[in-house]
Image (cartoon, rainbow, N blue to C red; front, side, top):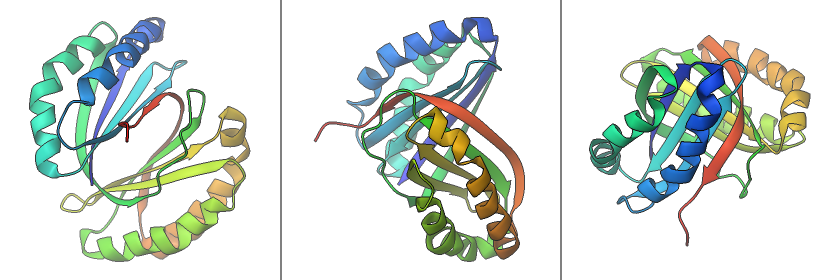
Amino acid sequence: MHLRTVYATGDPALIDSALDALTAEAPGLLAPQPGYQGFGLFADRELGKIVMGSWWETEEDQQASDLRLRDRRTALLGPFASSIATDVWEAAVYTPPARLGAGAGFRMLRFDFDPASAEQMITAARESVLPALRETPGFESFTLLVDRAAGRGSAGALHTDRAALVASRGPSAAVRAAGVPRTGVVIRSLEEFEAVLLHRPEG
């Protein structure tokens, strides 16, 4: 499975209107696209950050949808965003969440890794990191995204609500402390967001 992510920053005073527009339009724009598997919209309202991720069955589906939707995506973000970065990833590990609603908590980690050790890193995430996270109260879902050629990765964990996200900070730090020496990754950023919208196609 493949994921397209969009990371936008802008004026916090304008973020709510952008989120309202995206919540109203994104599911209707995405659902008819071939290969669509799901969408997540996340925000840091205090700092003015929006993260979006759309899931696609194949790389071809992802590319085709991007061509169709790029202009509308830019228009929806335009009144808010001063910067927009788009990335495409392979979903190496994915555990689908329950049908969580708005208010779930999301923690995102970005990191670099040696492309030659990609499989070792993915195996460690699946066999060690994920089981450890599952022991954390309120944990719902884990995703590991990789760009093998560039040696870049992004890991995300969903928690049932803000309180569970905050309570998981210590246990999650312990998981990272154990996993980093094993995998050799270099962590570049650690961020937290509220889930504004989590959408999956019907059926």
